[in-house]
Image (tube, rainbow, N blue to C red; front, side, top):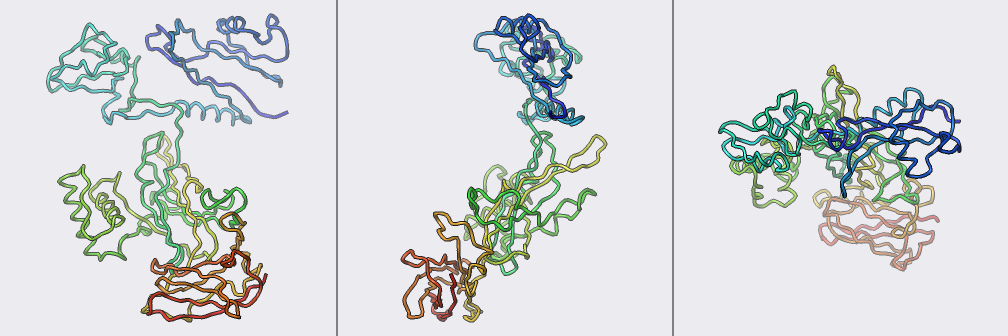
Length: 526
């Protein structure tokens, strides 16, 4: 036997403010429960539609079932005087389970979820006053603003200039409020459809953590793995409360991923591998109060001088001042990616917090070169109770926003090139020494093994591997012009064969004569 409570909870159904075609209020009209296999005449389950209708129309509420049994339940709401052809009647229930008071909390949570939220879809903060959600300015006929299904013999209505007629466009009775019908404020409350300027209600809405920010990763920095992200999470209100409740950011890392069956770089690691490595939140006397400003990142500093960037941003802001709804042309001589960043920075300074952006960065120095990692940046929020006190809110799931990296070395520039810094790892390459980054084989990576050649020149070229007698095993192209100084090899020869144990030579040959050829050796033990 399972301890606790189980019940069916009525949430809501279609209503009619007039009470003509559906009840004015939501409520259960019949509740019955059944156990055992008695006949309907003796209190058992109804066996056909006639018996079900008889039971539904009795409008009786039975007492709760307290004896542990296998129960069936019947719930109804109504009565409804008429259901027209092709019309839809919405009836919402939920099943609630919980131990002790947990069941009550679960029931309340279900009701709040069903109640959803009101949204200001017409973008007018004044709507929803006294039940009227659409304001029609005076000086013109309002027949277009009022659905003609309401009082068609009284349309059009003239409204004096410099006045506003508040109407409902959903055919509720107060559509011709006071002017045409003489309704009072009290009458209007009976047919209210808007709340606090939000005229449209959506059911089944739950509060969620802020959406994840847009992120990118530099996996070949000399300082470590650098994670960058923008402030998109701060610009989106909570979907249920429509309040800006952003609290902070969290950076996650998944270690020890071996690519087990069912996982990949695309679908990410198992959830138990994610570990929190960093958090920054607002300074508001709640939470850790780490602060965000110290982690802000100034983009484009490695591409543009401070003066150039300032001139570009100021120029874009001037154009936004004159044409705020248009996208200014990109400054001459910059790439599309640089232009997008300049636009985001300029719009933020211009005061456009919806499309303007700021940026943050965090450096993970505790990683190991070559090992597989997943990184994720999520956002968290806070709640505010009736007394204005903060409480812990919702936290984003790292599995919804992640990137895969294998940290690499930086390529060597010509002005600081030292061939002696080039090396292969692990050396010797054994099962034990490669274990830290060995992955489960798949079609794209049939061995799951690798060695890495590191600190390659900042140029294009080839790493050629030879046997001691001088036979070419494989030629691996590399491109250090991107800043990446690592190339990996899965220990499969150019003839698609696993190489054997032995000593191998490798030659690093650059296409740029500024980089001298380098020859090294390594050992493989299978």
